[in-house]
Each structure stands twice: as C-alpha cells, then as structure tokens.
Length: 188
Image 1 (spheres, rainbow, N blue to C red):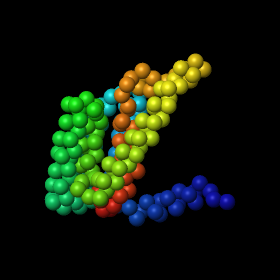
Image 2 (cartoon, rainbow, N blue to C red):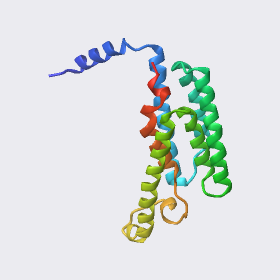
Image 3 (cartoon, helix red, strand yellow):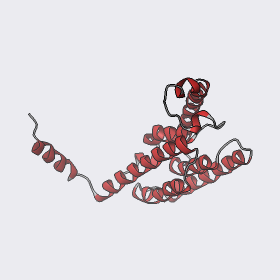
Image 4 (cartoon, helix red, strand yellow):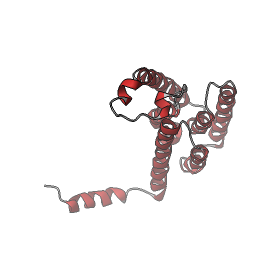
C-alpha cells in the first residue's frame, strides 16, 4: 500500500529534476489556460471578454518566448501574424460580424501560435468548435422556453441575444492546439 510519505518522496525526487525555468513555464502555461477558461466563462455569462485577459496573454508571451528561446525571427513572425489577425478581425468587427473582445483574444492568441502550422490547426479548431457551439446554442434557443419552464436558469447569451459567445470556441480551439504550438514544444 502506498503511503502519503511514499508519494511525497516520489514527488520530491521528480521535482529535483526540474529547474526554475521549468517551474516558471509551468506557471505560464497554467496562467495561459486559466485566462482562456476565464474568457470562455465570461463570454458565456456576460457576452464580454475583458480587455485585461488579452493583455495578460500578450504579457505572458514575453517570458514564455524568452524561456523557450524563440529566435528574434520567430518573434517577429509572431508579431506579424498578430497584426494580420488583428487587421482581419478589426474589419469583421467594423462589419458587425465579430465582437471586439473576440478580435482582441484572437490577436493575442495568434502571437502564441506564430507563423507555423499550429496557427492553422488553431484556426481550424476554432472554426469547428464555433460550428458545434453555434448549433448547440441554436438548439438551446429553439427549446429555451421548455428548459426555463422547468426552473433551469439560462444566461441571456443563450436565450435572448442574437449573437454567439464565440470566446468559448476561441478558448477551446486554443486549448486543443496549444500542445502543437512551437512555443510550448520548445519550452524547457
């Protein structure tokens, strides 16, 4: 039978193999994931993604790029991709196709995926997750009276708003593509 002391001993032995950089990168990845989960929940409940979340993702990129030893060229390509994604998203925002929070979140995440195949994986994941999300929300809206009549609370993002909380799909797409992003693969 494994005791608590045995578990602690194994944990401390494996922990000794980690460096400070490993610990910092684990914190960064956890914070990255937490920001995405918060963005999805916030968009689901309020139809808003706070600006500080996108800013936090951009700020987290800086030490992650440094610790993963990204080259200056790769960082430049990441910045270029982020600018291009922002330009497309801004146009969609002006045309009232996309929300401002979604545009900023996509821009911040494009920085993490850079000009790599992982960016395409991320965008395809977002598209598929968005399709599933849209169909699910349309089905919920179609039967929302049936659900609410039984005392189940539904946020207005699901019942009365005409828009889709796409931050959920963006977060799901990013979390699914995260293991393929070079910045995560090159981490110590």
